[in-house]
Amino acid sequence: MARLKIKDILKSGKAGDEVVAKGWVRTKRGSKNVNFIALNDGSTINNLQIVVDVESFDEAVLRDINTGASLAVTGTLVESAGSGQNIELNAREIKVLGKADPEKFPIQSKKHSLEFLRENAHLRFRTNTFGAIFRIRHAMAFAIHKYFNEKGFNYLHTPIITASDAEGAGQMFRVSTLDAKNPPLTEEGAIDYSQDFFGRATNLTVSGQLEGELGALALGEIYTFGPTFRAENSNTTRHLAEFWMIEPEMAFYDLKDNMDLAEEFLKSCIKYALDNCMDDLKFLAQRLEQEEKNKPQDQRSMPLIEKLQFVLDNDFIRLTYTEAIDILRNSKPFKKNQFQFPVEWGIDLQSEHERYLVEKHFKCPVILTDYPKDIKAFYMKQNDDNKTVRAMDVLFPQIGEIIGGSQREEDLTKLENRMKEMDIPVDEMWWYLDTRRFGSVVHSGFGLGFERFILFVTGMGNIRDVIAFPRTPKNAEF
Image 1 (cartoon, rainbow, N blue to C red):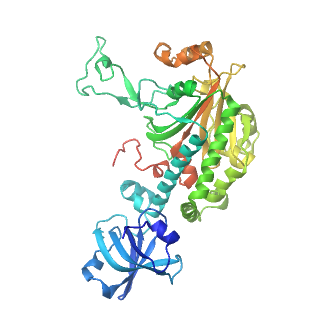
Image 2 (image 1 turned 90 degrees about the vertical axis):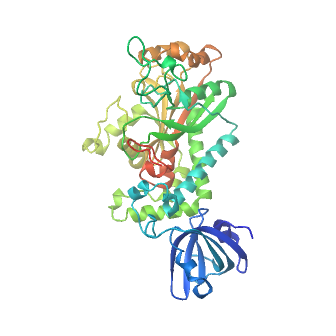
Image 3 (image 1 turned 60 degrees about the horizontal axis):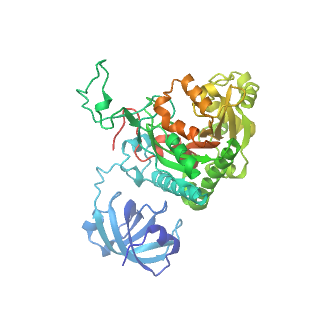
């Protein structure tokens, strides 16, 4: 018989069916006569209970059935007498495919701290929490591709190795094949990158946006979905050195079109999660509730599924950065000096400010627009006031900014002048500026950090727990 996934057995299996199930042991319990094994193969949060008549099996086989061991079980499905499952599998034959020494296997059937599981990231997929997270992560990746495909977007693969710095941030990982101990030098004593593999200095990309714009200004609507890199020495729960970004770019879209797309896109993905990941979401919701049960009521998170439904049920409020500053300066937290960071026109809003607007003032998702140009990137469309740009940030409850984007500057002269103001080498960006020289059009785009979105959907608190193998300062294990 062919193996059936446990998800399919639990969904459509009937008493009397003969099946083969394969998976890893989560727990084993029982008495002298009967053992009960919880078997999981990763296809679902739910385990298949295996009922073992002890007298029917060799003692040596039963001794090797420990948490973490892999099994192939053949038997007959029967109606379950216990609570929690409708059917269980009466074992007729058990093969131990791979042993797991209980004295050495680190992921035992007890509560482990998230920090401990990060140190054992190669095995943490075996836990309920991380099984749920990574099934949801897969579902969200599929939902993103599904959404853009159905909207007629083209999926563009932008380069991971690039010579440009899209953000002008300078926090990049250098890519080089030169001898690190004895690199060739110029007459001035600098490293001579003309002798490097690409003949110039290159780095890992911080964004696919600039190349994405090139595609959009020919194909109309594109999106990228790939890894990006920031060499920030930042050890926080919100930062990674390697993360994934979704960046759509659209010709003929102004700022309003951009906001409309961002709102529809986020709601589409969240609806997909609610429609297709409910078992995993319920488990993570219970986990979050349990984790916060000792917190004061006003410090607890919104229940996870309620939070996701909240985003679906509410239109996103839209207002300018200037209006947001006015609201914050008239708020009780500001007047009582309860904000940690200052509030004045021209600042880059902090998470506490963004969350106040979403969770306390408007009580729904918010899109802020028209930020001061001095805190935004060079490529954003300049407003006529010469102080602000047509930027937009989408703010969500409990997380703050989840999307950042803008209408792009299509005017060649304005773009060149802004680049000079920000010391961005105009000559090296000739290829980017060509799109403004030849058939320039109004266009827009935005970026969604995939891990930050998965944080929101799963209710997890640390971004290192929603990517398989986190890359952070001093950490490139696995």
